[in-house]
Image 1 (cartoon, each protein chain N blue to C red):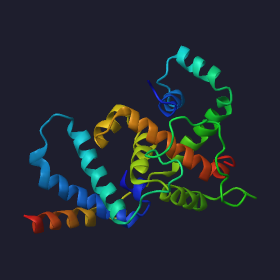
Image 2: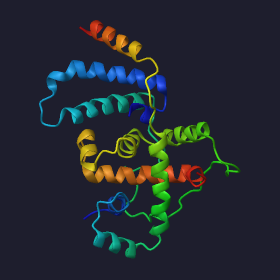
Image 3: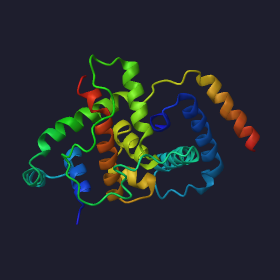
Image 4: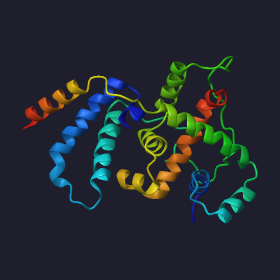
Length: 160
Length: 72
């Protein structure tokens, strides 16, 4: 999950270690109100989001769920992808690179919901509990994160 | 009242009832292609977001234990 958010293997393992340490130090604060699994996820997510913020990752303002108006046409094409048009199929390395670049453009909060939903397959409820926010916020962040990724990656998935 | 973003996400991911989904699609006729498009995106992400294996698990464990010892 951490790798999904930071897109750098070494950094992901460092943050995994940091998360283990954080869990070890704060295990006495686990009070059983949520499942241990949810609590663990919350610690790992907080460590990762903190690290992204320290690096100055805020995401780009387009489709920012904090500032966007309430009504958006879902079929709007927004801005066209800046990526070159594909002339041939991308290889796996290029696909990964394009995904890394696209994830880089998401805010830490958007990365968290995308990874938890698309990779970990968690429910809205679980994600809301981990991030300590409402289900509506989770769904709204998912909407804007997917819209941004759709714009950035359309030429990649259209050719697979 | 649910915002459009929330309803759209529920429509894409499945929690909307059949009736709600039909009403939503009627209200937004341009959505049909959008679903196919976004499902392709979801599939791409599912296949490529994660990284499978820890290259040196023993080293990872040793490092964690060392850090825990230092933190004591």
